[in-house]
Image (cartoon, rainbow, N blue to C red; front, side, top):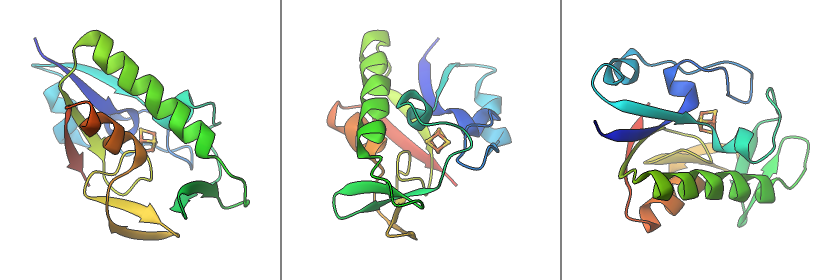
Length: 134
Ligand code: SF4
């Protein structure tokens, strides 16, 4: 059975900044045939839930209270990548539009724009294939 990393919010865990999930039935269905590893890099980076929204800006990650949370984002994404390497995970399914998990769309200066989130960039650097889910 293949192991696949998924954004924790996509399988219904309330990990989003607003304390809600982003459950997608198509992702949950994968669990019938695959071993899913649900993780949230922002929680792993030490941020609370709920938490202030954050965006990529000028090479940093800032939240709506004006705090620099770049270290949290980098630390959490790094933990996810290390775990994927240890477990031999080669594929990830992540939530589009997030400054962490976005694959084709991310958030820059509070706008949804084409681009990749911090976790996606790090996973792809390690050769892990990443798919995005809206
Ligand atoms: S960081 Fe990723 S897993 Fe966590 S809530 Fe945001 S999109 Fe979901």
